[in-house]
Length: 384
Image (tube, rainbow, N blue to C red; front, top):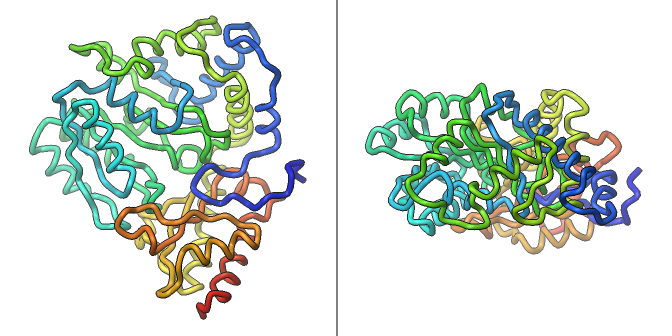
């Protein structure tokens, strides 16, 4: 049983519920960020990230920097492209708009390839776009938190390598790392960026990236200086390499407590086969999506192959307002998120099902949420 004070089950697409041991690690006593014990923990953390991302290539490089997942966008835009370069941004929701805006902030020309709400750009459309001009990077949101749309990475990466081999494949995995399979080496990915507070199950505050050797070489061959100071890999690359080699190093002060929490979360994740973890998330997702369908509700992502395993975005019945159903759920001890996609924000809600809420057999979060949703809808006048 959890030792945490009683509280509503947080079932939004991040932050998620945290394991007791992770929260305990957050209360680690204060220590120097260049002390031998902390350097050991940070080095182990970076090495464990290689296992989570499934990379054995010594040329690839993990980064863990204080900041939100959004800092990952800045790192890509500041280090891997230069002003005037071209980026092709595959659009499956709100976060593609933001990534494109980030590129434009750094003087990079962002072209968005958009799909209808609930769908993803198709491979033939992407191939046509790649043949129209030379893009330095292509970005894809693995799971868009605003729509619950899952993008397929393996076939996409194969297409990019075949049609435009100089284009780097950049994955926004903020809502996928830890609940969706990602095979960094086998799929030929160049960057996967994520954050600590979603399926990894660590409190918010860490920007986490895995970067390929090819992308590191692209960074080293820049014609101009990186267009960020705090986010510059000129500053961070030697720090990460030193920490992983268990050598103290300094550019900017990390958060020892967050690193301890991440170390604990990764230790838990890697304590059993990753395949079993992903299977557990798929099973929970299928259970939830079946229950949603049985309630007569529709998902934003209509096709099964487009549906994420760590969250579900559900259209509300006609006449039901998001605030009233969210308030009803809160009274029953469950927190869902409202809509985020700009065009339909008031018409749907989002159910996050990641991490301990799915993995821990002693937790009843998912069943509790489904029952609360069923009762809550009936209370606002919806009949199944």
